Image (cartoon, rainbow, N blue to C red; front, top):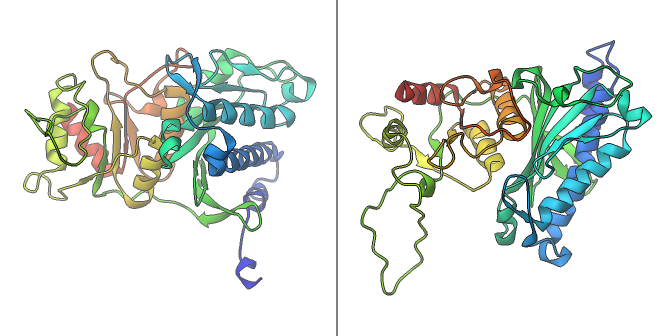
Length: 358
């Protein structure tokens, strides 16, 4: 039992934080515990995968125009059900719901907070057993308490976030969350069923050796490629070649340069799950970007529940996040499913990128 003597669970950690603020009500701590509970439910299903019949498409199309995966539906329902049954959340905006979900009951209407979330980031990866995650963002309501939450509660710039976080599922699930006091990571200990502090006070290195971009959407690295009649697999998608600004292509050349880039060359690592890519870069240093392309002039990622929470976490840890023109956290959302380009990561690497975008 000795190895458990110094463990600090997520619950214990949030209680310790409460002691630093004598007038705190504990409502945010309760909301974070609810998120942790829902994440554990999702993780159980992820670990059972095909045995729980959560692989593949559910059959419908969501508000984003994307095919809904079975796991998307399960995770979305799990988070909504857990938080609806509590007393610490007045409503939710989810990638999977066209409109906001308001918990219009006496207890929820008294709550100070609303939540925005992407229930499953990278859900297509579960079929092949690689990284997936959840993203969440917490705001203090601007509307009157004792009444239902309203749209303006959710349409706040990212700088107004009270907390933000993400969960990565798999063999060693981790929940990372940030407040203005810092960023901390909690790994799920299956022997006691609790998220326990494993990554205290995370700081993003100012410089790294990794860049994360979908080359298939971005940059033709093998011109005039021919498919061999026989041989090993080769996967490449050049649908969007020449649809990205030349300045960004020049930056990728800079990333892999051994002469122009004094810290280069960088390695390209791209999981198809933003949570996993940004988590790695947060710990090791690196930059992730998903720019606008032809047909997606505003990018692919959603501002309110993907870009904003990841930008908040990264900035608190010492990194930077921009849409290529302005700080992500300063953007005023106009609608809940608004999209945005995203360039995010180590401070010096984002600054290098911004020089190319001028």
